[in-house]
Structures are given as C-alpha cells and as structure tokens.
Image 1: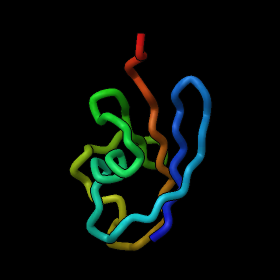
Image 2: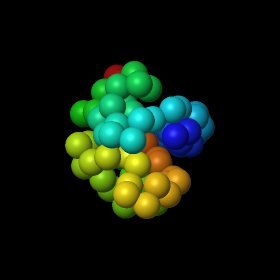
Image 3: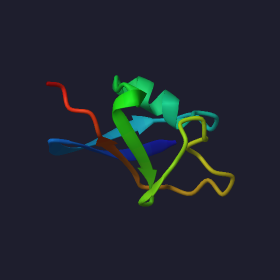
Image 4: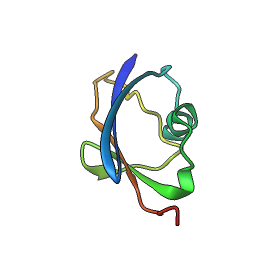
Length: 73
C-alpha cells in the first residue's frame, strides 16, 4: 500500500512510501532514515506507538504526520 507521510522538521515535506501490511511505524521511520527517538508520529492527529501496524484491519488510508521534537544543534 502506498502511504502519504508529512514530515515537519523546520520545514514541511511530503513523501510517499510503500508499506507492507505488517509494517510498523518504526519500519516507516527506518525507511525514511529518521531516528525514532527524535520524532513523534501521529495518525489522523493522534500519537501512535512505534510498534503499531500502519495498515489497519479495515485497510483504510491514514494521514501520517512525523514531527521532529529534537533539534540538531
């Protein structure tokens, strides 16, 4: 499944990535090259745990937003 991801880290960036049915948010961060300790992941505006699967049982398309919470100083 193709998923749109919005990344907020100083500037807004949108990317599309392919995710498998069993991919977790941790896997999405890995595919994007993002350290999970530096961000908060939101699905439809609500925080989600890294080990939760991206594709839900209804196979609905979700809006994923990644917000960087640690600045690189």
